Amino acid sequence: MNKDKKENHPVADSYVDIKKLCVSVSCGEYYGCGTVYDSDENSYTIVTAKHVLQDYYDGASEDIIVKFENNESGKASILNENIDLDIVFLGVGKNEISTDYYSVSDISSSSSVSSKSDGTLYSGQTIYLVDANTGDIYAGSIANPSVYSEDFAMDMIYCYCAVTPGMSGTGLFDEAGNYLGILLGGSDEAEAVCLTASLVRQAYQ
Image 1: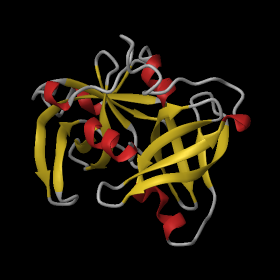
Image 2: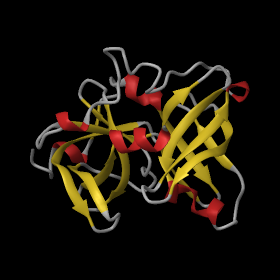
Image 3: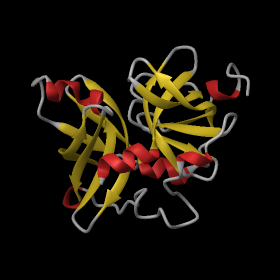
Image 4: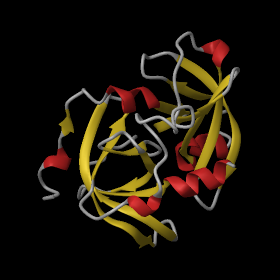
């Protein structure tokens, strides 16, 4: 795919399934995105990039706010973090949210959205990233399913896709809506690097 074309523009809003999985996350002066990763009868678990919560870790703010697809917001707490992978899992009580949301884990066995094996990724594969702050969905492609990133000191999925400020932590999805990983970094040159779904899963277990 020509990285100067399709991936530089939001795609149509018909991909409602992945939009419902994506949330915005804010803390102090920082904001980003996240994915509803799991849920139980009492709470939702959100996965996002740890650097989105920089003001929390710096002691500048204790309030972590998660806004869901229908603009409902809830205060979140940190459940688990992985400094090496730059990801954090947040909990939001269902008592704060009136709408029921599904998660990646809830529907992983369905044909709709799942956490896909990294071994199925390939160069040229079409992918999507959601900006939960605006509701836009950006289309792009995988340039290399496994490339070493010096910035993050690990192998990551390297994609050609437009990213905008505040998209860190959003989910990476394929055309079927499968969850492929989490966006951790991007550039002005329509490049993005994502942590694989398998590493997110390992960090969560």
